[in-house]
Length: 192
Image 1: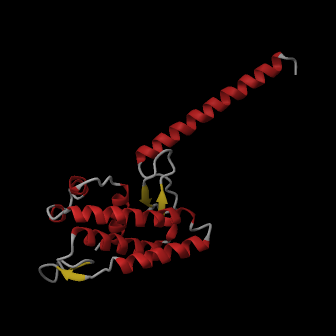
Image 2: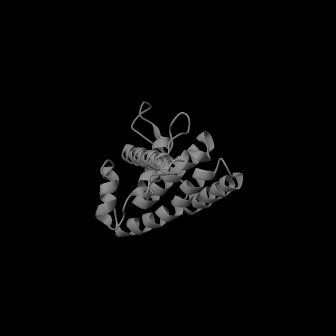
């Protein structure tokens, strides 16, 4: 079981538009065994889970600065794990393929996704820290992400947002430099 991948799945879930069953199936294209079982109930349950998980990522942004925020984040996670219990079981075909799943086979798609996401997020929080959960700093993006960088420096959800923000910052600096040069030239002409 790849807990980091499960945490990243939780971020993908939060960022995904979930208007209907087709949207959920699109999210699950790499998991056809789940996609084929999608129901309207799953969509409704996962929309609610999106709203429940977002504050955890938002808390991660400031957790290292405000310890009370991290405690609230842990409390939210514990409450969510009570509402969406994890029921682990071992799966595989023989001693070389045994692996752990965090939801029962009979679980609905939404229960499976909730259990995996919450378990992955809990492991990341405990092993790597609360500040590994973030919200994209590129305007106007609000996507969330799991920071897996070695130095905890990730600020954007994707390379696209990072590039867009860097270009915007470069252009702002260039405009500011032009204004500064223009102001300096105006002062010289006025004899100051």
